[in-house]
Length: 65
Image (cartoon, rainbow, N blue to C red; front, side, top):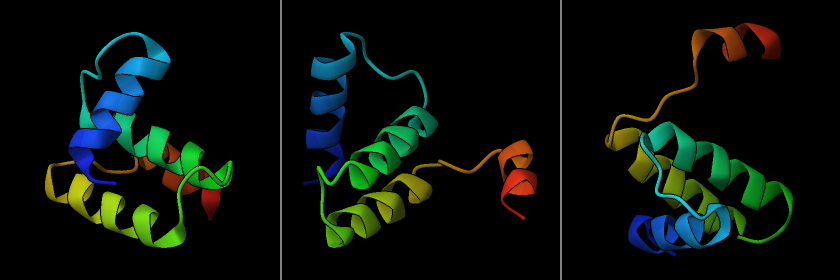
């Protein structure tokens, strides 16, 4: 799966298009947790999304520490 396919799946599932790549990052994480994508797909998608500007907000980073 690539980012284009991810955007299509997101739009189909959520019935709207994502406004920011962070929405796709969250959707990717959820998909991985629910075993809808493989670890390889997850890693590749996260890498691509981060290159497009996706990031974990500071508030969430503090929660994971």
